[in-house]
Length: 114
Length: 112
Image (cartoon, rainbow over the protein chains, first blue to last red):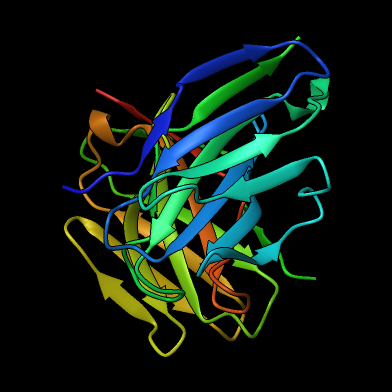
């Protein structure tokens, strides 16, 4: 069964450092997303991406965040200057369409900012 | 605003019992709803979805019920098994471009 792959599974970084979280969406999917989940809390939408541009972003997705699809397979989330409160699980997801079943999540990257 | 919430944060059942997990939503323009299962250290795993033009949908051992009048969604799991133990999230989509809004989650514990 097709999977969304995320690397690394766990990233520890010092406050103020830049991190890049990587994702390989399912190959025939056209829509890509990032979500985050602070420990013990609900999953929160960060950003959606389609046709090489951001479709929608949440209030969490401020100027410190950026996304990129550098090639035909990868989808990345960059946090320029990490803060302690950025510590969370970050999930990548992809879907064939906006409203189509098959919206698939990766296993996540646990980001710990120290 | 748009939100999705859960009535019960935890649910403990015996193996073989039926489980019901509930969810309330506030946006009447909701287009579709999805139930996800999340096991420890993993991402949300799709269970079943339902569109706003339906009130019931069945899968393998799972049934989702949608009551648009009271903006309520439920997930029924038949003959619950220990492997069903996880956190269950409802999520709502359709009013924004691919965005899903998640509820808080219910921890389901199945005792052998």
